[in-house]
Length: 282
Image 1 (cartoon, rainbow, N blue to C red):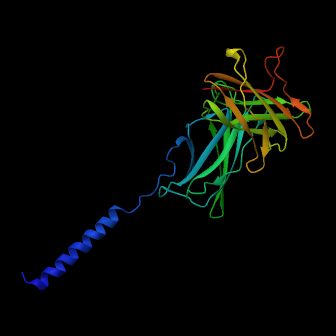
Image 2 (image 1 turned 120 degrees about the horizontal axis):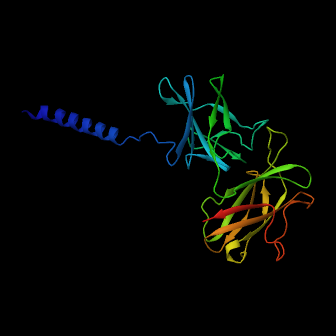
């Protein structure tokens, strides 16, 4: 073969190989639900609302939920939806909602949205709750309602109570989700019931903290701090000191902006626990 024919063949071969290599190394579409477990699908004609969390289930207390909306016609996911929701529990003689956040786009995702909901109660079989999802795609509004299952958490991570001001409040443990021995960042949500469907966050109250181990002489722990309101996330933050593994009783006292005690008592030799508390075991 003459030399003048060899060079074009070599060039074409190298170019083809380079193109093939580039294709093989092209980034694959990222899995935006990696690390999440699907809770449930809600089908609404040509769309499916997918609900995800880290546990794959709803339970009483604080739930962080991720949402995607799928186009059933081509199996793609919408990137510019506007979503809101309303959880409802149907009681024998009435119905009510629970504290729930707005839904926003996850900042580094194209199709994933996030929000939180705090179920303050459930039936023993997980029944009673439904969720209505309202959403808009390309200026077209949709709505769908579906029943959901909410299981009872093993420990009291949420409590609903009447304060001394005759207002009903809900306190829910948000963090720590995975407690460790030492100082843990503690985060709590505090909400007031305006009516059966509205539970806004309460601002600028105080939550006093006194953790105890009932099975170990009701001892406490050092370096705890009371919880104060943080306007950035509308939550209450403090330090929770856990000196050993086991069952902890998180005694709380709720004070309003005037330092009036709305619920809870000091732990003393005569009073082993507060009437306002949350539980934790690890």
